[in-house]
Image (cartoon, rainbow, N blue to C red; front, side, top):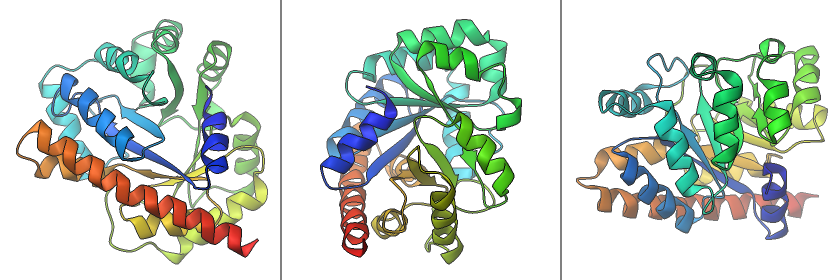
Length: 273
């Protein structure tokens, strides 16, 4: 199942999509699998599986802590594909990584292994669309969606370039800065969603960075997004847990709450049309 079909199926069920992030290998590889399955039970529609990287420049302290813990434990990009293979029958998988991870392991070699593991999409956090010529055609031939990022600083000209290559979904960055849970959702985030939606009609939009509460999820979907991406809030629940069992319980409960927000947001949007 490709990612756009996931969004279509979720919409038919009367809600927006919930995308949940986990750092692969935190607090351990087996624990990642069990926690991911708990997130799925709670209502996560797509799993964004983070490949640990030594310079996670897009991530705030919460995810950085998880990334460095996984690296210290020796987690490799190939371990992440094994985890993806274990989970891909349970939940659609999108890898979140950095360009050097794919390049250093061989673009065709690593992406081919990702496709064999059942990976549906890949987000390369530091790869702009005009530097994607080496990655994009290989991924496309393998049936892997390349998910590009749209930032508050993205110009209309650049958005058109991104839209030409977009598949799976567009990752709309809600604000400047790095990842991390926030108390409030800025009004500019909703304006950004509306602006991107006006210019991009052929691919779903999912909003991330700072999305941490059910009301955040509700509001971005009500504003026109097809899904919401939650990362740091899930990792925070793992940080707070005394053991993997408690972590699984916490993330499942949070996923349930966020999924309700995704349903409410979709209903608000439908009521306004």
